Image 1 (cartoon, rainbow, N blue to C red):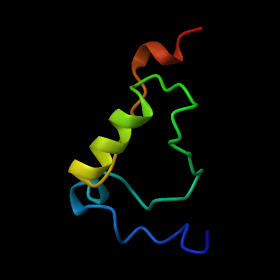
Image 2 (cartoon, rainbow, N blue to C red):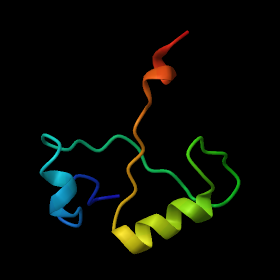
Image 3 (cartoon, helix red, strand yellow):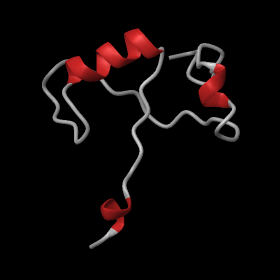
Length: 64
């Protein structure tokens, strides 16, 4: 994972919204994990079509 801080492949429309990016984690989309926002296949498809996948927390996610 030598290129974990190389964000040159991220589209400009995403980079212009956020500040300086920082690598946090790598997620294996092997179909064995459950995601709140969709299946691994749906996430992979969005990455293929849009060039990225962005998961944003909703306000309800912060309520305990």
